[in-house]
Image 1 (tube, rainbow, N blue to C red):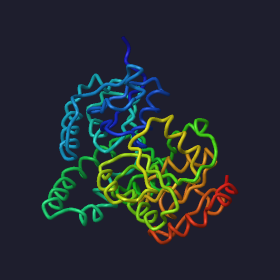
Image 2: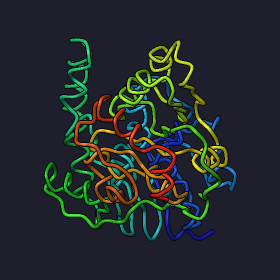
Image 3: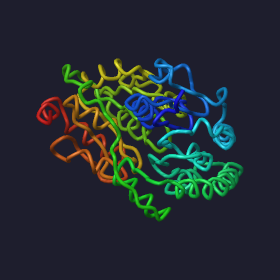
Image 4: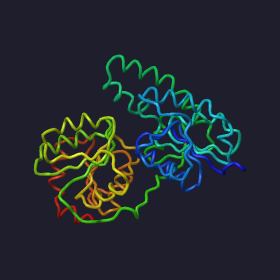
Length: 336
């Protein structure tokens, strides 16, 4: 059999975040195998249904083990798995396999240089115990030179936004071209307007969902639905305990999430300097305004006063509460 024209590599498929959805869609559109260190079978990956998903080993538990174990698997990947006219490398670990590619073009689709090693290094260090800070520093010292060598070995580097293009230039001195993530806007539609606001961000520290929860704790008459999962889910549920106006769904399938977006009043999305942000585009595709923050990728997608409200960075529970009260049913409908 002849080798596929294209292959797509990604670190691992753990949760259905933006990067994971992107590579799943990309591999499907190209009819390409999707190769990753491991995959969480609890989620319905399109590549798995189509028989194109190739995993290098069983799942790995623990954040450090996932990265180091995935790096070991990609470092030993057989060259035959990379025998193609073009290989697209996604993530921060998979690109390290570039040196084993025997032929063809080498393309890196960059969602962002690893934020824990570059722009959010101090953010993560401040939230870690002393042992954790030391471990993070040692891991970053190991990761950064390997990641940078891999990116510099690429023929083409693609950034998912102007924001990420700027990070690549600032931290690695590398120029890139911008190709925004693929979003099936036809899948999102206006269903109606119910009396709840929706948070769709992954439940991780830098997504600042705790700010959203704290704001709605101050507004018991306003309903919030948190429609996602992540490592902070248990802590955020505890934070919202006793608030009858705040509910959680955990991870939803694509149809259920699209249904919630189509029925909500507005989507609230406040991540720290977001890379691009697929969720706001999905919300606007359904005619729903976005309450966001004026930084990162949202500056490329949300028009303040026309398709949503952009709060001064960093967003606070007070400014968010004021925006929610201002964006009542009539105001949200006017921005449809």
